[in-house]
Length: 452
Image 1 (cartoon, rainbow, N blue to C red):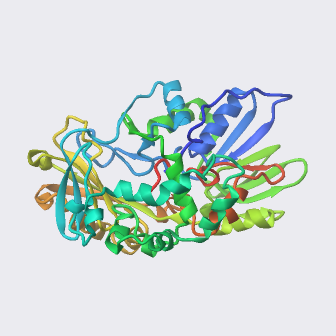
Image 2: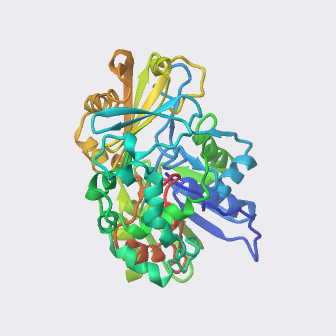
Image 3: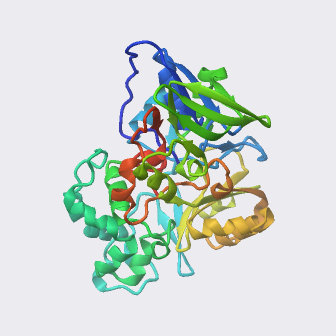
């Protein structure tokens, strides 16, 4: 869910002048990288983290699963063009592997029909149970997406630029994805597939410009990778170097600054404490920061960004099964459906007979999980995945769920900007305010490890 300035190769910081004391809020990946690089440059850093662990929205679960299995509750997929991320993995001697298998068949479930899709094959829309024109039946969904969006790519410019977007594109920020699709004369059933396995754009206010930018950033992406042994190895590597510079269980409640320093009030062990520094880097998600007291008040534009930036609801339900029975059917355990879920079998390259299947939900279906008990969530996930992998109920041993909306230190998955927010709010997310600086996926043009 969080990227490290994707597409940029990091250079070691060189300190100019005397060391500074820098206070960093949040030990997610942005806070850990900031602290690590400032420390290597000789600055005095202190990290305040409300959780009792590092990593933020990078979270690997090994318990309560059997046979050494583990799952990613947060960041899982790393595009191969996230060069900075990959350079840190190399720096710490961590290995990566393909996230998706290149063998056996994927499953697509659409309008009650289950389709098998061979890895690496091109699926024409005519194979799906859709009411299409003859021309559309011969096309692939990717071709339609490119047909609709590719003409705009010539006007995109550099989507990582602070000056982005170019003037001719700014109008697209006022359109939702659904409004844009409808304006292109695409068959309604194909329009539904634009969110195939991801989001129902008809029920979301996502900006067209947000999606165009994310598509442009992903053009050079050919493969998705994962960290062998668990994504938390990366954040643990940073934390191991920082050690006692991180204060865990420190819930920040107030930020106060003046011309000479920044002071923070935080609660640790039930006791309110204060800490002062020359500078502060705030990496807290805006969904959390909007609930803190900040004195003096930040600029109007910064406050608007903090209060209004949209976060996407994300949830995952993990199901432990005693046998990988789908392999006997020639399936690899990955799939998409026309209801907003993805099916993952991310342990496909491990030797164990047991496995963990993941139902990955976004948007309104994810939000609805907050009203369910844990048992109801497991039952719901089984009902979702059974049509995709028939026979699932026979092999289920138990499960676990994570809904990021319920996490007090995240309050959502990652940023997904609504109409008007790309031009109206995003440019103000990273701007410093006096001695307070800002970092995190919400300040980046590329939100999350992997774009929905």
